[in-house]
Length: 192
Image (tube, rainbow, N blue to C red; front, side, top):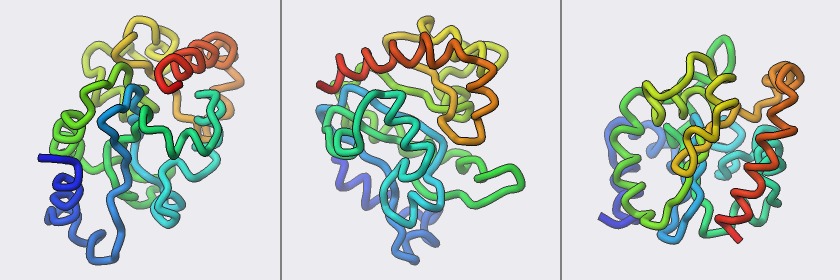
């Protein structure tokens, strides 16, 4: 099954019918030559409305951490984006709702199979780390991110770049001092 067939199958899936009926397309980006994959939670409402993943302040910060501009982020075929859910899951009390259960189980393996050149997957936030790292995660997100080198070259765990994490970033200055430069070097190595 090629990527175009998978895209159609996602739209036709009963689980996604309400989105498809509203004209909302699944939001992800895969390329056969992708070497770096970004896995996050799910598109926010702003991203779903614009049709561009990471089209918000979180995306700006993520691009800064990667050391790339907007053009490279959206148009470099060596960079792929695969959230745990391809649709905005709705708002909850503390922010966006969690990705739908079982969604990534159904679609990630098919889409990952279309990217044979993948080298490293960035796991942005707790949901992505829980899904991909399973029992190899440390007790907390902070410890997992602090020990990012334990997961290389397959995975690179990151804190979510949301403005809501400003306090975490202030408390953990090591992240921008030590982790971000390594992330930028890895990004340069893989997508240039």
